[in-house]
Image (cartoon, rainbow, N blue to C red; front, side, top):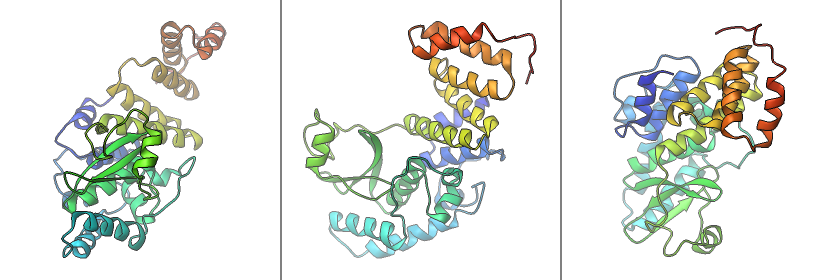
Length: 283
């Protein structure tokens, strides 16, 4: 795996959206831009499928709409209304997403974005409009938190735009006390969001039988979580599909050794005995 890419993904100097663009470039075979991207204008020239100029346009229009509103809460509500209704960000949850939803610029242009892509874009827009924004995990999904001020925050689903009231949040987080904007609801770090994105993208690529690109996703995740036995098993499956039998066997064996009680490990242990590692295709 490209050590520079992993270093860029781990960097605290880049926003989540910038990191997703780097991953998109790596997975879909585009050249990775190594220069710093510290502004929306720079992001607009770096996407792989289309221009992100539309992102800057959306931000400018949202800023203009909320500019004269003094109340932070009213400004936040007006911003979300502008974004989800006027700019057609409103959508519905899907069990699976098409590959185009994982491309940053293409997904934005089509208004069809997978959850993490949309969360990153929405957070970028809201932050550019002057609010503190982060991602939080509310079982069973990652959501966006918009901090109106020190006392109040709006927590909402990036895909649908639907916000949670305290009663609903209380039901979903039994051990949480205080206001939804309280620090007890910890921010999701970029690594967790990126792994979520890559796992979902990997599944979409496997559905399309793009096993080489799915393998790149797994390799990036392993660069962040080395020697994870479940990921090694998944990589073994993809290598097997690509006829890299010997390397696949190594990953399968690692999984069996690390997770001997896993039902899948017991099945794999039997299958490993049947694999003829003498007839391999080495990649």
